[in-house]
Length: 278
Image (cartoon, rainbow, N blue to C red; front, side, top):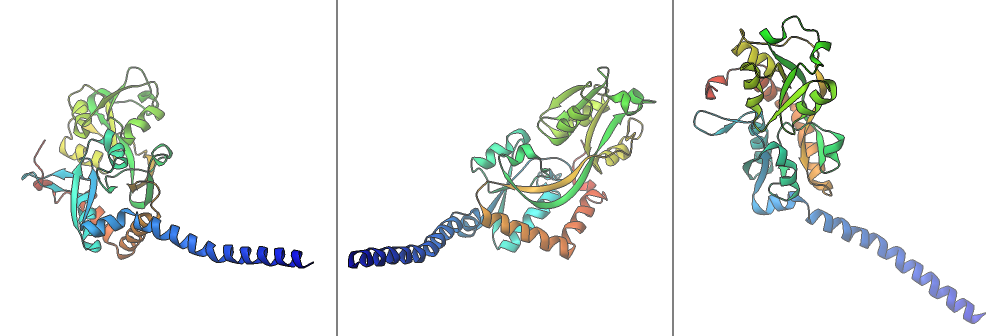
């Protein structure tokens, strides 16, 4: 009986010790995870590095070669609120996610829409912008055509390689030809030159292009494709950064700042004279 009591006592003591150790172990793991967050690196180094790809009006160069656009406003406001400097890292669209994963910058803020395929590689914040894609067509080449007529081997679309319009065009018009380019402006230029019947872009870009070239371009349908939100993209396994960015975005929605900046860059063209004519 005494041996049994000693064994039972030892077992109870071990259980008690384990139960006391568990919270400490969990706390250590939490502290370790927090210390590895990109937020801590940004605070320590005093700079946030933002990856982006150039396309109007999200991010572009003005007549002096300086970066301007909606993303630049968002990135600078974010850095200001964090009390750090900001470094923008222009990157080709088709390599921007690998560059993020490789650590070339801390976060992507580049009008990136959330897709399941991208979400397999990166984590997304809540949306900081919303948009939908519209068809931008060459007037003379598509006159009298119905939406169904665009899904034909006789029709050619142009789009930027790796961008959402390319995916949406392929899904909705699988019979059409699709020309892919590395630069965003090249797609519109192909439509202007008559080398492609149409392209696709997030509004209000198509409407703005029609205003610039009313004799050549049109938005023939009101249909908007792939209506979704654009979000920050960040490396996986960083709950602290996800929490911070989501709270920052929510605060800017509540204050009206994100909506005001989006309207400035997307609903008007007061900024147009800052950008060199293409």
